[in-house]
Image 1 (tube, rainbow, N blue to C red):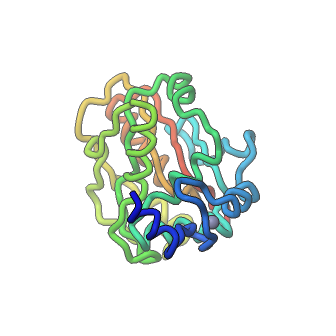
Image 2: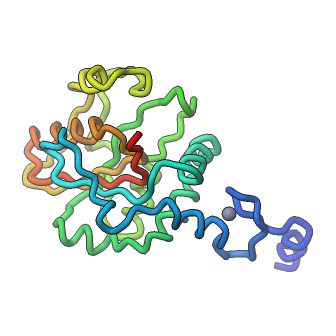
Length: 219
Ligand SMILES: [Zn+2]
């Protein structure tokens, strides 16, 4: 304990994102203020896309800009989900009520796609889903939806190519009949991957699929 205090005195704990010195166990006030700037309003949290046919609803918390984009890059680069966890806590979103309202049985994440943008193997959607599952007592099943097709990096493709790229990319391994499923992803842009996962789940008999995403990239 003394040793820890001494270390804190010599190397005071700093915010992982802005380097501001913070007290042990405290959250960074500087970042919390910046988070507010990019937070989506209660209404703005409902993401609507014309491609959503199987995805019953989708929520997101932040605009994919500024500190949010930097934080996600940092999380992937450092293989650390603390940023996402901290910024989710700023939103005061009641996941437990959300899951109850939507009668959710299990949480999954969009199967990992290695992105050239980050050049990282770190599966942030999975980490995010695990954290949410843990905080709500609901189960997270990492093997329920798997990726079965090698896809190209969505960023390198045109809008129409993106849809084709993901067709048949996922498969369900397990029984989802009559179940309501929450699918977690870090960023939503066109919504194609979440819709494709939702379609795959519904084809396998799932009755409801909702999406939970950290940030919304609307171009
Ligand atoms: Zn900070």
